[in-house]
Length: 522
Image 1 (tube, helix red, strand yellow):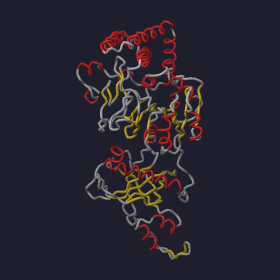
Image 2 (cartoon, one colour):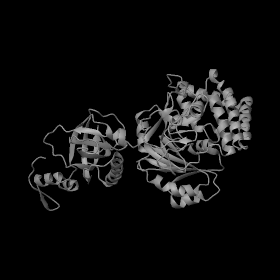
Image 3 (cartoon, rainbow, N blue to C red):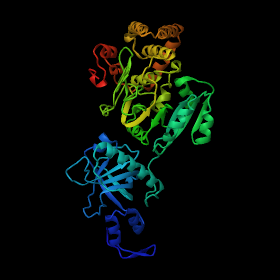
């Protein structure tokens, strides 16, 4: 702080001493009023311990302030604006010794920039202090620290939303990528009442909620229009299923990303940004999912997606955290996962341009396994599908017994055969004949359980599949998809290498491998 002669601000005599005292005491708003601008510092981004990003979901830029005479405010958390290469961002800054994760006592200055994913090591950042939020503190666990950081972020966003921009910062940050969160609704007012309010509290600067109504027969639409007029509605004339419903409902919807969210999913305030930040950073990512936990048993994964999906060479899908009927407790064991084979349709993030280039969902699926088919086509085109475990949602679901409903069994068996036919190369199509045998065994299993309605469902699935083959409709669809994949392909390797090489049926039922982490070559 440079010595200045006394001046009048709000009829109060001001000197550099008063400004220095305000900064030293963490009275940032008073310092701003006396200075008539935000107090700022400039630092270079240097490598840190990466605890914030890898373990807490809050990656930080560690700053080294070259000016040794620069006055540093007291330890604590601050709401700040951050300028990087002429662009302005919102963030929160930490000054302290990191007592929860580091016992060395070394002070650090770290800033977490909201909705930001660039590599800025070596760059200079200018930080503008807007408000002191809280003091430094030691927490008993990383979970408690993360909870405090979640609250700090919410408080910082509230402050910065109301704050004026720093002087001389004419250029705002580029608008955050536009996201449309699309809910497919069919007579589920009771779910909308429960899960729409937390969705509206999502902390992200540029998102819209779209309700695609699949011919509801209840008063869902009237209720949404009355209570949440900000929700955009597309009303379809009948129940078109998941695949066609989303294809029709999203047609003409402008956004950088679509997030397809089941109406029985409860989101957390910061579920959206980490996934979008990651997809913005890597343009070859076409689809993604958050970690999906059970709404009923919140410490466990949820059946439909868990921590990301895989599929074996016979077409049997499974997840990190769920294999067949065994659902694991989430103990952070898959938090380092990144690329997966497919992402769950319960909370499916899609890069909109790639979705339409690929032709959207295969509408012949109606429902079930359409997201696996879509992701397999992305894989064939050379694009990535990822999981982002730091983002968490809770799914009510109904999938712990996936074959209890005959229609559901029919769609699962039929669609599984279709996705194998469309996505396997010719030399691997013999897999379908192996599946015929395996599905016969499944029929015997249902017979032994007394679930006689499942046997006609399996038979119907096979007859319908062979009918589509003989009619030419399925070969035509395969040809059209192959051509789309060829046009957009950036592939450098055969996508079949990403299939699980062993039989998940044999691993689970014969070798007793019930957890994803126990699988060989998993």
